[in-house]
Image 1 (cartoon, rainbow, N blue to C red):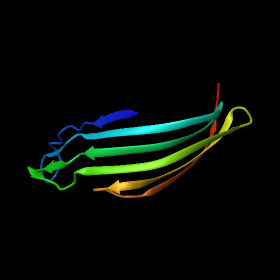
Image 2 (image 1 turned 90 degrees about the horizontal axis):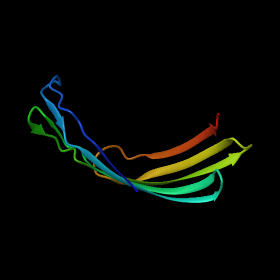
Image 3 (image 1 turned 60 degrees about the vertical axis):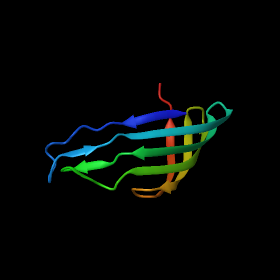
Image 4 (image 1 turned 135 degrees about the vertical axis):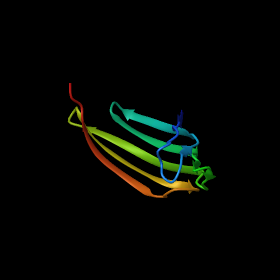
Length: 111
C-alpha cells in the first residue's frame, strides 16, 4: 500500500487573482502475483481526495474525490525482454475527467 500527497505553493501572479490549492491526498494498493521470475500480474486500486482551489479569494467547487481500479500483466520472453499489458478505469469520479486507459509497452533490460 502507498500513501501520497501533493502540496501546492501560492501563485501570486495568476490572473484574475492569487491562486491557492489545498493538498491532494492519495492512497493506492496493489495485489501482485508472481508466477515465475519476470512473469507477474497485479490488481491495482487507488483513491484521491482534496485539491480545492481558491482564486482571488473565491473558493471553487472543484474538490476532487476520484478512484480507479485496474490490472497489469507482464510476460517476459528471450531472457531480457518483456511485454506489459494493462487496463484501468474510473470507479468513482466526483470532479475531473473519467476515462478508461489501456497500456501496452515493450521493455528490454540493459546492463
